[in-house]
Length: 365
Image 1: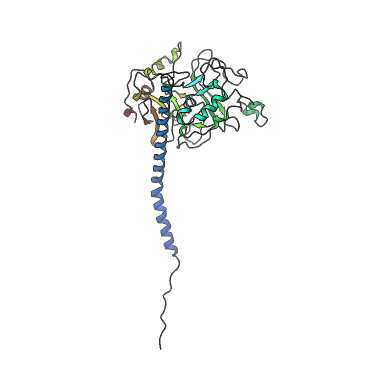
Image 2 (image 1 turned 60 degrees about the vertical axis):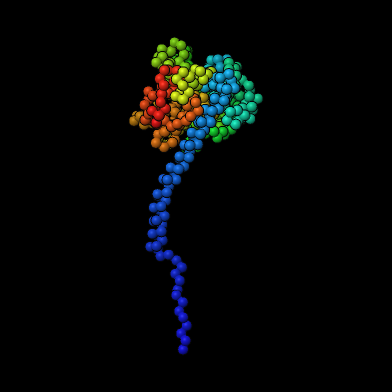
């Protein structure tokens, strides 16, 4: 009698042990791959950031070529500016505005000519030296204290009628490594030297990060280098030691290439800022590109704040890149990262345009 062939039973599932082994292997592979992926992502972000700074530096050179060899002002602070609210909320003349930043002047040279034209059409005074117009964030009603939707504790005198083109997100002004953490305040004017009767101090202006009056503003991570203390005013003996280290960009500057006596390849022009991103993940400030003018270098790059001196202040150049690297553009257009551990004095020398110290950029790695 013929015996029918037996068909072997095919197993259709993994055993529990096999499944656990596969999961363990996948976990190990992910553990090996994720750091590599993060490293590649950060490398790409840092490269993009360096390219942004390169484009901004080239834009400044093109601006100078079209404006009789002069770079734009670090920040337009007109002595004729007037606050419509009589100085109740804003600084009095001669520091009342308009606080137009150098990045706004560079708009036509970073493929944002339409944004520039719209701003100019809104009010040409935004770009005119000795303009009479008020601060762009404080000059155009309705004001926050007239808005029933804004609580009295948030009144700051900010005007919601500012030109809405300022809300434009401009990619070349943003570093992709920015953590996206919201700050309580937004810089709308950064920065300038006060004189008596206020006193010999560095000044800046901010608005609250609330809807309609600051939340929507286009942000920036880049500012001009104003040197150690900017241009130290005559009579300011307290800051006289910083006077030799004046940078290319400061309030109402009109620096020419010929003014950069130390050489364009050895003088810093632009750098990164995060507005005080703290080690606990919180943030003091964000920067609007309309008011992100220039920063002083005297605060250095290393953390200096807090009881353990391991945190940052909002007026420091700062980045979110790994290994404590902050990216900068030099006046000739080349870019490089500067280490937080770089020699402080060399960093100061590099920020001055005619201090007599010719810096080798490699010494700041």
